[in-house]
Image (cartoon, rainbow, N blue to C red; front, side, top):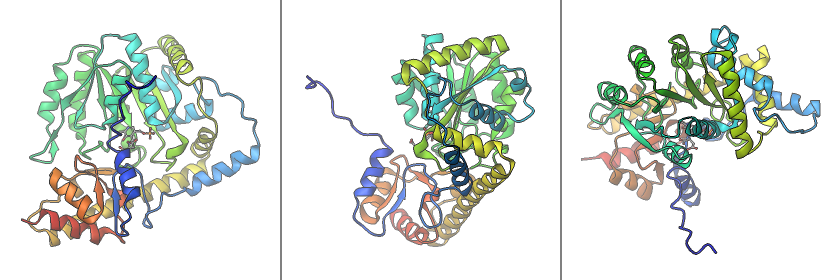
Length: 398
Ligand code: KET
């Protein structure tokens, strides 16, 4: 029956995780998937989350179905976290938020919803982008291609080209944007550049789809939402996919949300209805436990404070590793410009290493990074950073 079914080539990120796990070498270093590891190389279980889980478990609540849109307390807490406690749009009840299966689930529900609302609409993602955008949007029937973004020569943003491409898009094109900690480059537009871009999105009637998967890993939980809040202030109608996978170190619980900022409460009600219909036909309703724990952390002042501090600790450790890697590479490989380590933001660095160098790092040294040259910085710690630096110095040596 399935003779015609093609073999799966594998996902470019998860495939490398499997290769890494199968590698028997002791000194191997995993800088592939976007997971935060602590100084010991472990995925942390946050203390705030453990406390919230304990409290939820003590309540011994029956596991009934949640509504299609998810847990109400979780959805409210997400709105406060993304849009702010005083958000006028939230107060006017023109923001719809549904609980989703991680950030990926938010993108999928958003893509399905948009494809139905605008069957001819295409999506544009940055060049380069998180690979899975193509799979998610194309899988929802939305043709997907890129707008110019990264400049390999300067290892920074080509803002002029980005603006040119976006300003030339037809109305109702879905424009996927990372508001902080761009994946995979770690290169973000400045506040001034966002201020130039946002009016173009509005004037051209584009559909901004903001994907925030690293809130708190850039400058701070609140600071990292500034683009979202500027879009609300500018009166845009737009979508936000958000994820707690990274900032709650809660990857496997699949906790995310899709929020849509509408122009009126009445419009928001109709949009919410269609999101519920979309969810119903994909997975019916989301799971309970992770959302309960997150809602408990976000709604309890003490637990929130503790969580905020735990996020800061993760952010600071990433920044320390960035500085260390840069300093050590300056010494060990003086001809190799590694300033990207300190110029870029968030979990990822875009190294500009060649494919050949990346394969040598993997084959000769057991140092695994994505084939694009993306490094997941928190894979580094004081125990493996010298090994990493020596390996990079060896492959970039003239
Ligand atoms: N958006 C972005 C930009 C992103 O990097 C990820 C995950 C997601 C959404 C998905 O989040 P989740 O809540 O797990 O569904 N990125 C890492 C893991 C992955 O590829 O799935 C990564 O880039 O390594």
